[in-house]
Image (cartoon, rainbow, N blue to C red; front, side):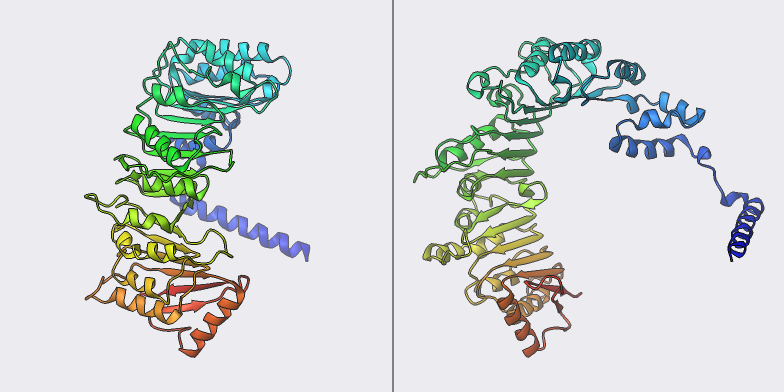
Length: 474
């Protein structure tokens, strides 16, 4: 039996060698790949595996030559070990030649001889500091961060594009004593700085000093004040300082209770912002949304990739055209009715939902709509989807009341009617609810023959008994 298997493998290998000799154009050794193709392959791996340049330089003389002839392979310096690899990165800096490089300094080298290690790192990179492209200082002790930025205080950094600093949560750092001291490059300059991430780091000096930013991320317990009105005003102030900002991330790591004021912050316009990420109580979020006019905004997130829930109390503001709607390019909207499952729907909710259709008219680019804990009032607010959102692809209902599958089918048919929207953009709908409510909708589908039709197919995943998936057909 074993002999038969070996004979079969041997015959197969002989056949492959014979084919290669007969048709040489069908085979190609990896060393015959053009350098441009190898470069693309190597670049993808270099981004994911830090020491990959060293690995490929030890494979063969061809790859070694390629590695040494490509300075960009040697531009990522990461000090994340207890003993800084000074000589290793001295070689990397030499091989990187004049190419801008990236520097990351973590907390690991500073559990022992802290000052000695940080001085060695600074001495290494200082002769090359003018081509420093990005600087990450992650969770180092306060005194180490102070040494790093004191040494960089007077330097000229023409290549620096990214600054990422995270506070070290150690006993030697007292926020009350350090809030006034973080002033990076105070007597120097970084005129090309475009991206800043600050986590637990005082931000006031930074946002006033560097006003040509493209992205800004702030995580701070002090970023918001004592009221929702003040918090909306704080975001307006940040946006006013960076007119070219494309992405703003704000996360408050202190969720103590805030007070509310009756004052409504007048809206302000920022024309460039495309992404806004807010992490905080829904009342703060609502105040910020109502105080912002962002004509270029496309993504509104609670964290990257997760849509931010905003209260239906924002609908009256979103429905106003002054003279234009506040979010005409928004791609996804997640509307939150009640804040908890056990809260009853209020009269105020019903009044706010009266602005639902007009708010949707101001979102012509919308592709995804999620309604969560919203009272649809016997499908009343489903019908407005026959007249709005011509590019809508995804529709989700999460614990919504007043919904029937029959009305969803009618909505799809009317959207496709050439006398209405004439739109076939809708691809699928999800309904998330309690098991009992899902069972009621399933019975409705069977009763009215809605499980399989020309317009959509109703599916209930076997592992998700609280969900119905509706696939819209072309």
